[in-house]
Amino acid sequence: MSDSGSRVADPADLRDASRERLLAEIGLLQHQYSLTDSARLQTQIVELETQIIQLELGLADSKMRLLQARDYARGCAAELGEAQINFATHQQLADRQVIQARKKNQAIYASRTWKIGRLVMLPSRIVRRLLKAG
Amino acid sequence: MLTQTYDDWEWCLVDDASPNPKVREVMERLARKDKRVRIAFRQSNGGIVAASQDALDIATGTFIALLDHDDIIHPNSLTAVATKIDTDSTIDYVYSDENKIDEQGRPYDLFRKPAFDPIRLLGQNYCSHFSVIRSTLVDEVGGFRTGYEGSQDYDLILRVTERARTIAHIPEVLYHWRAVPGSAATQLDAKPYALDSAERAVKDHLRRVQINADVSVSDGGFIQVRPTLSSPPPRVSIIIPTRGDPQRIWGVHTCLVENAVASILNKSTYLNYEIVVVLDVKESKPLHPVSLPDDPRISVVHYDAPFNFSDKCNVGVKHSTGEIVILLNDDTEVIDSDWIETLVSMLQFPDVAMVGPMLLLEDSRIQSAGHTNIPSPHNIGNGLSSNQTGKFGMFGVTRRVSGVTAACAAIHRSIYEELGGFSIDYPACFNDVDFGNKILEAGYHIVWTPLARLFHFESLTRDPAVKPHELAMLEKRWKRYFGREDYSRQPA
Image 1: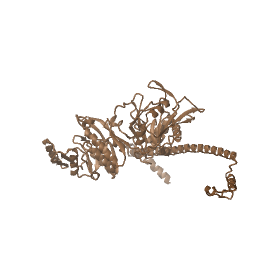
Image 2 (image 1 turned 90 degrees about the vertical axis):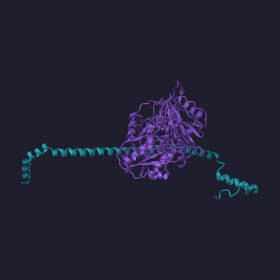
Image 3 (image 1 turned 90 degrees about the horizontal axis):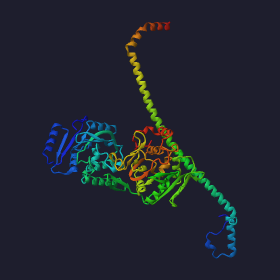
Image 4 (image 1 turned 135 degrees about the vertical axis):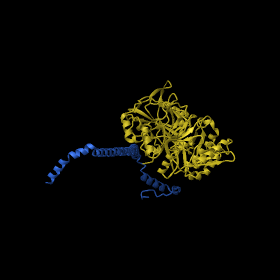
């Protein structure tokens, strides 16, 4: 307890105190709690109440934003899941298309038309190679 | 059996002291014809449980498949089961889809079953045919039990599912249940003692899994299980978003929210609840005059932003205090006085996050019996008669679903907040479908129950047309689950 505060630990101690002692204690308490300045206290209370209301509004607003943020996070996770599935589906499709294209290529190389064409073009290929080598 | 494409089987047949000598003759002929047929003869008639148990006693296989003496299994049944079992060494129990065949052998009543649903199993033995169980597990649980005649397989399945490491469903019709006059396949009351046995089996099961519940049998022959409410019962907040519109209900000009609130106050027997009405206002004035009773349980929150059902629900939940929130449309009316008790009790099942009731249209047809994703999200049973229990009892049993409509849904507040509430990206439609998917994706479950009923005078207050951007948003998030009934997803 500060020096300016009441020195009374137990109010029962004041039961037999003298008038002067009681007046002194009242003075100390009035000083400690500024009971004489009620108008100032009232203003403080109003200010605090306004602050509490603003804080409560802020808190409510934050709660709503938190709720929306959580939904956004869940939504993003869901969209990611969807994108992963789409990616996997498209990858499978692309893989299938590559395999089909390779098969088609092999079929062309194995065809009689391709082989005849290759034979027909053989002299020109040889000439081209010779020219390159020269 | 003899046409099975899978070879490694044995067929255990027990003659329960049949007075017909031909039975023994047929069995012995079968055993001579195929060494895989194992036969046993009882000295006295012991009933279905004793005979089934004798069959178990002579069985030596790793898995036990249950086949009634007058039914048929598909030639590929055992192959399909063996293939499934090979995919996972922890599978202890497998069941398949089934259908019925009439006396002429014509198939009907195809039953496409859902993934394993322990809550639906409490209401009916939907797994039943074709059930294949690991034999060590059958031994572990003690096989068939005397005293459960008529539902001995149900009792066994309940005990098996309590301990099975993995339960698998084969979505193929592997079993054809023969329906002849007098069989349980054609009429429920063919074996009235079976219902008593089933009720006792469920009670025993609940005792073993330590769920306190009231158990009874419905008129439709389903077991009704209501988990006991905690004491004191949790506080419930009923959130009603409304514009205060008047509409005609049963020909009478009615303010919808006033009607909904009056029906709650007049009919509900639950003691610990509050009603939070989220009322649209413009410049602090309601759009329509609304007069609510002067009751301390009612509070009104003004909402002056552009229409957004999701946001209004979130605002209502924020202003409420209950551990459990019930989202309720203003175009609803309570039918069953214990509707809150029922919804709250269903939330006591493990991991159940949201529960929806049976919603009926003005003419008592079904408006919604939950949501399905097949082929795309929509209400189950919409427009069908509520006097019927539906295909395979789907309108008569409490069961897991892919979602429930937000017209009436009870949710744990903690889970509502954990999942971010309703997404404000869906101002009018699909907010409940989206929320349901969020629940399932987080590893929780959604339950629909016929034990609580309300009227839902659907879409009286708004244009029922679907907004394209809301559908696009839904597809962007959840399209991979359309066409699937994945109401038991593993958390990501």
